[in-house]
Length: 628
Image (cartoon, rainbow, N blue to C red):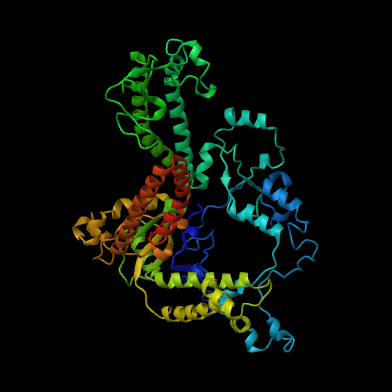
């Protein structure tokens, strides 16, 4: 079970120290802040990582790591990965790492041990005068968590190792495959198709360094394992595979039509030589003749063609009789078999599309059962009492009233979205300032103030104008000072509880809670006490809880978790109106360009196809979504 500890990404959370004490703390570290207040026994309240081998009761142990994997005694060094297990991009980068034109730091002295550690010492400006670092100016930080915001020396080797072991998905290498050499691609393809299609891989956690891991193969990863990358990705490839099969079968239906259109019965052989090779078997007809048509209208030039009108290359007028002639195809395409095949193909596509929904439902269940995540053990309560901040109270309620359901993790979310967004912006400002400075520069507030003042004093008139468009360190530092003051003010407010996330010890407990307490959103919002099957399911004896299955922890958007229904309606109405206006405007522009040039219209469509997704992404940024 990898869920209980990973769900703890709320704004308020409970944690248990070594002596069994519980703390409810504001989760500021997820937005870039940590409160390092210590308890009397030395336990840090800001740390909300629950021991993965301990549940809410220290005597109950969670399932251990599978013993089939041989764990190494010391952490694995990612810099010593086998070249065969690296991506081709990493191999190329490592081969060029000593080239100055690729790596400007090539040939320089490597980082000394400890150089990447947190820069807590005296600042460069004060180190000469105060070698022991006792001056107060060198120890003042923006906040305790700013220890992590120092400028590190870039290292391409570490960056590529981090990318492959943290950003990319990897699986734990089974003991029987650890020392095997890779076979050639033909052998591997045969095994994949006939022997290893149902092979099970165990997804590794990001940064796993206790057991050997390997990147998932883009070709030989079994389809059932695609759920490891997320339910959406698994369903995407399931849909892709289903449509490939559907279209292939539909193509088989059309074989009769293809053979007929390529035969002499449709087009005599002498005309088939004029057909391009790639269009053989299509309904293209090269056997034509001009026939009179009194109701036809010949257009003098290319343009918009309406019914009854013909372009100049398919229409002619006899100057003597003023008779209109049009070009007619003389191929015979009237056999009933053609219509029957087309009709059968359409019926097959309709039936297959309906069955596709059932297939995807089945795949969704299969992927979900294959992956044990926090969602399988968790529920969400979206209407708790505003003052229900005690995790022990929630634990007792479910344990006493839901057949002993054991709560492993209780995440209490409060209405502090504005504080979270402020902390997020503050963290981004700090990162921006760090990227603007030289590696190793101090991030102390007084040192940043000095750097900002020096840079602003050096600016001329044009640089000041440029700073209005492209802010520099002085502008970012000014905003950082304002954000610090805002955080200090918001941290003093009392925020009501808005959501409760509960992770149980077993899936059985989760299903039992959902079955017993689910009454529907409307009845829960009206607090209809008659809707519950037993009065014991009323929280505090009077509150009807709106209980539902929780979202995956990594899909929750904490900064928008408490957006109201009216706010979301206004934002989505605004984005919908903007989208409709944009579509109408684009259609009008394409029509205008098409009247001038069809080639220009094609380029215009391509340009808007590229630009519109970026526009849509900006629009969705105005919407508040509680989850991804």
